[in-house]
Amino acid sequence: MNYDFDIYLLGLPMALVKLIGDSLESKFTLKVDAQDKYNLESEKKPTLIIYNQTIQRKVNEFRQRYSLEGIPTIAYIDSVNKSDEKKIRSLEDGADDVLDYEMSFEEKLVRINRLIQLYLKRNKMLICLNDFILDKNCQRGFFQKKNLNLSPIEFNILFALFENLKVSISKEKLTRLIWNSTQTSKLNSHITNTKKKLAQTPLEIIFKKEMGYSIKFKEVN
Image (cartoon, rainbow, N blue to C red; front, top):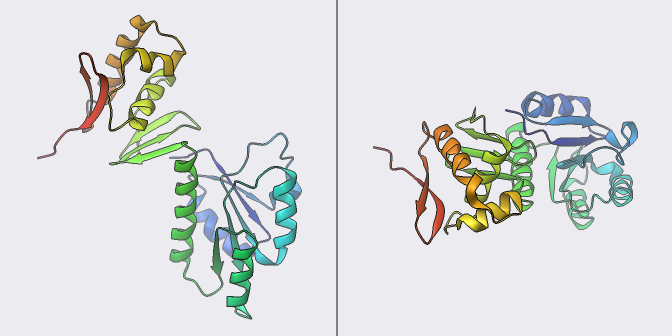
């Protein structure tokens, strides 16, 4: 399952690049030393930047030049010499997290994945709940890593229902969210098709008169 997002790896030792690539390349596009090799004015912005702490100033300039200040960053400390001092300096300079030479790769990977998920959820690009993943960037939905094969309209219906998980959405509001219109006649057929694609999952789309649509998870025996 590929989320179709980019991760920039800047100034990292090739051994670490390989380990990250082996673990994340199936889900993300990894761009090594992207500030030198890619024209960011025509590229989509990355989801995460992992960089060597020794090029902190260059990375800050790079982020400012291409308006990447909101993109999370992880600084990598490649030696044990003054490691604690370098960690503090990196965090003070704006890094969201720090990896150091002595950390196990498992810990590094957990920290990387945590920042990615936080960023995507904060920007409402990814919903992960009860084995469901909705990826807004590529408009695909998954249950237990299996593609639900949703059409763009079906995806937008489901995404809107997940975003309003604790409330019902009226037909008019849901139609306005999908088509920027209040003509609800074409909604029913898309709801029916979406329900069919959810039939083998524990998720149900419920409609209550005078309240609207909502989703709930069926109890599993």
